[in-house]
Image (cartoon, rainbow, N blue to C red; front, top):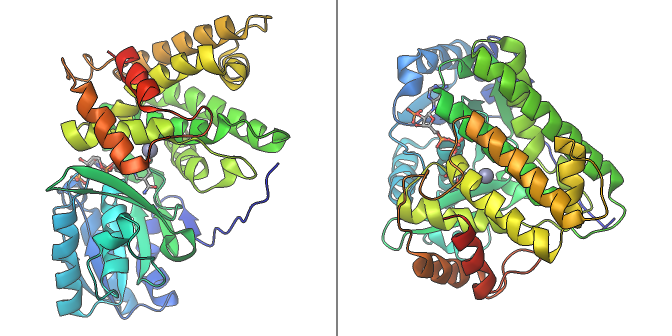
Length: 390
Ligand code: NZQ
Ligand code: ZN
């Protein structure tokens, strides 16, 4: 097991009606005036935004608001938010939504107290050392941004989708999680969220680090639980227990718990970020196309952990032939994704002829000549993986 620092100070407030505590939480964490950030309107239609405002009013916390954050959030909205936050003199960001909203709120939180261009942080030109506090009311379990120190933003001009990871500054100070808020999710978004959290675990699980038995078992147990709850929620979308377990899985998957002591991989995410940047597809659906292709490549290059995954998560019997075990596991994983209504090829994702050379070029320009860790991907390997996803 590698040395590690695990620092996860987010206060999670979980359960029915918890959004009514948001005012008290903002106040407790020192807010005088919060800037509410939300997306395309689901929180308006569901009445959640009104309940959040009511709770803030009852706690005597002022607020201003900016809606209109789109999925695969963009830099232009962050600039707008920074200007607005400065004009309004808000002292805390309150994200009401999913990963796109939370990531935008984090970018504004860092950008508003920085004299330069916030994009400097994403291209490694400057380090985030301070930011406004970020609070969250989560409406979709998926990206895990409510418990992570990450934010992912796309630059409109160049279509660069880049992630920034600063857990010591950008982790939300609190996250309100009411599973009932997720009843209104369309089945496709529920499924994409489930896929995203599964891959967050797998990025950590597919490691060459030895002696990580606890991390392995936490990953396998959480993956098994997600799959079980996914079947339940597909049958019965208003099943509170299933929604609650899925919501908490999304946090566990990405707050660092699953990867302690491991060298993590993240190549599937980086390969996917190019796809969602260029073709604007839903991140979770991009992952169900890319990850099985990445695993298929690994089945012949480094099958050990893929075979273990096949055995312990999908019940594939142990044999001497690790590659064959791995391939059987991948086929079961794809079957599960298809059952959830998710694509497993570019074509099913709606991209008939992806420009693979462009994807490869952009990936290696953004992430360097070698990508990932489980097997370090050269340009040639990345191209092979994109081709396996056709
Ligand atoms: O915009 P509204 O109208 O709110 O609709 C949203 C959006 O269309 C809808 N939605 C959310 N909650 C809902 C709802 N619809 C009905 N009822 C509800 N309760 O769902 C759609 C997707 O929302 P979005 O926030 O984009 O989803 P998600 O949480 O999957 O976030 C995706 C973004 O996060 C990034 C992704 O790349 C993508 O840009 N990621 C962020 C990470 C992080 N910060 O740690 C890690 C991830 O790997 C990921 O890369
Ligand atoms: Zn993800």
